[in-house]
Image 1 (cartoon, rainbow, N blue to C red):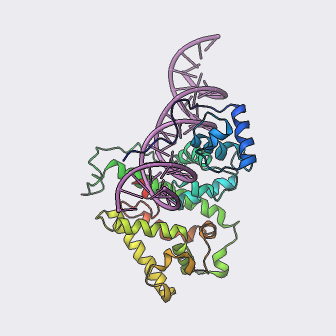
Image 2 (image 1 turned 45 degrees about the vertical axis):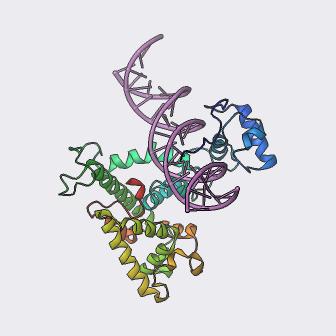
Length: 288
DNA sequence: AAAAGTGCCAACCGCCGAGTT
DNA sequence: CAACTCGGCGGTTGGCACTTT
C-alpha cells in the first residue's frame, strides 16, 4: 500500500526560508491558528509543503522559542532525560520549556554525545572486530559489533549520568529522603508513562528469545513483584496502563520530574541491569 | 591567500500511529 | 476491516561558517 506524498512535489519550494515566507507564515498563524498544516501553505500563499511549514513554525518561528546557548541546568536535564528516555527527543523537549526537539537532538549529537564518549575513556570505533551478525551469541568476544556498540554506548551513558547525579546530589532537594521510600519511587516510576512504555516493550520482546528480552522480562517481573507487595489491588498488572485508576499518581510530567530528583544512589536498579550482557536499557527499543 | 577539514544547525525524508472514511 | 489522511517523530543531510594546514 503506497501512500500519497504529503504535498505535491512539483512547484513546492525547498531549502532555506526567506524572511518574506516567515512573515507570511507568522501572520497567517497569528490570524487563523495552525489548523490543518496540509491546507495552511495554500491558504497562507506559501509555496511550501505543509510539513515544512509546521517544522519552520515549531523549530524557529514560535514565539515561545528560547534562543541562545543551553544552560548547565538544561544540559543536566537533557543528560538525565536521555538516560531514561533514550532518543525520544520530543519527550525530552517537553520538559525543557522553549527548547525544540530538533535543537536538543542537535545539541546532543554535536556536544554531549562527543563529550561522553571522550570521558568514558574509549571510543566506540576503537573496538571493531569482525561482524558475525546480530544474533550470534556464543560469547562476548564474538558478539556482533553492533550489539557491543550499544553496550559501550549504554555504559558511557550510565557513567555520565551517575557522575552528573552525584554532582547534583548536594544541591537538589531530596524528594525521597523526606517523604518517599525507594519502593515508592519504583512504584511511581512503574505507573508513569515511562513505565508504561517499558511494559509495552517488555511484552513485545518477551515473545522473542533474545537475551535483551530476557533481561527486560526479569526487570518487568521484579517490578511487578514490588508493585504487588506494595499495592495488592493492582496486582493483575493491567492497572498500570490505566492512568485513570491511579489518581494518586501524576502523568508523565511529574513522574519524570520525580526521576530527575533521584540522586545517584537511587538509580542503581538501572545500573545493575546495565552490567548484564546485551543490556540495552529498559526504554531503548529504538537502539535495536 | 587558498585549499582542505571540521563543526554546527536548519531543513528534509521517510516511517509510524491515530483517526477517519 | 481495509484503505487512506494527517500530524508527529527521529535520523540524516546540505550547506554555511569557522579553523587548520
